[in-house]
Each structure stands twice: as C-alpha cells, then as structure tokens.
Amino acid sequence: SEKFKRRTIGESGDVNPQWDQPLMIEHSYALLLERTGALVPRREYQLQLEINPEDPLAGAIVTALIPVDPELKKHFEASMKSVQG
Image (cartoon, rainbow, N blue to C red; front, top):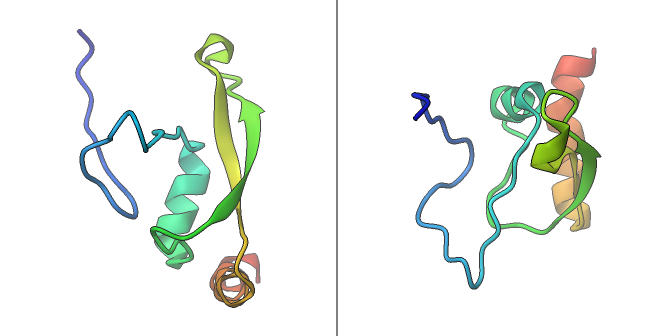
C-alpha cells in the first residue's frame, strides 16, 4: 500500500456513507482556500467539477466552490481578493 500524509482543510471526521460524500479537491485550489480563509465549513456550495488530468480514471475533482448564500459569497470574494491583487 502507498504511504501518504493526510492533511485536512475545513472540517474532518468520520464519513457516514449514508449522508456524506467525500470530495477530491484540486490540490492548489485547496491550498488557496486554506491560505485565504475563504472556506466556511458546513455551508452550501455549488461545485465546479472537472476530470482529474493526472488520473482521469479516478473521476471528477472539485476545481471551484461557488457559495450559495449571499453573505458567504461576500466573504468568499473578499477573502479571494487578497490573492488576486
């Protein structure tokens, strides 16, 4: 088996197969979310999905989170402005 380090951003815990679906997030985007503090756990987001170019048979990965709540959208945009210039 391959050895790897697990690092979580946001919230972590047991995944309940009945209610939860683990998502694979593009690595650099996950680091951006961590660095900016844009991610607010347990909130509703629309997902932008793309096929993982490094492993196309593994399925889709999340390349962007789009907040649904207007207040969260403002927080997300303000957080991302710090890296967009």
